[in-house]
Length: 253
Image 1 (tube, rainbow, N blue to C red):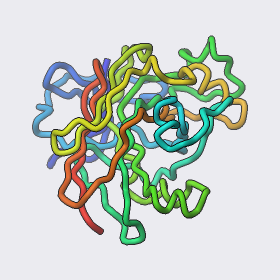
Image 2: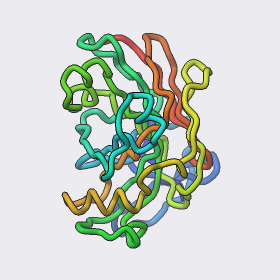
Image 3: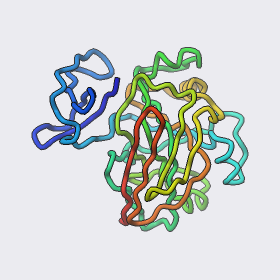
Image 4: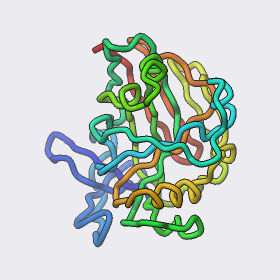
């Protein structure tokens, strides 16, 4: 099943579910008790929003060995985790804004885990019980600022630097799905989720040993090799096999 958030000229932002090319509203709490209402709103008439409103966005660095290599960095022995602020979240089709503080902003195509229920000290074998589903993300990064600061908060934390969507798929299998990223139709990144250094279960176990995961929280699971610069006027599209595509234009501040 696919869940999303959307709005129309007649409807304020709300959760819905997708049936072919129609959206039905969700009555109740998507992360608790709810029921699906009739699917009557055409998908083409809806503005899709980021499909979760997380308390936190966790990310995993260097989770593909080839990406670590392209930055002359070691593959970590434990998951390398960092935060993006929820204010960085960006809707599908909205513009990534290039900040004036940076001269080099890059795309990073990623599989995103959406947490479904509260958890702490989760063991890897039980991780599936805490996952609502999966989505697509782009860990946009001001690479020059990341390198200058050596800490990653500023380089990865600008508003619009966490594109996410277009929906949450509860039946997606993350074991072996191809991730691609195209900029203006040109292929930049392509790899399989099977190439991740740390599995989704291992990542959830590690993060939850440090902090409590809440319903709606997001985990960006790392990017493959091939990251590259974005420029004003570009359109960047991240596609994950069996999950869909996330597209965003790029504009100057």
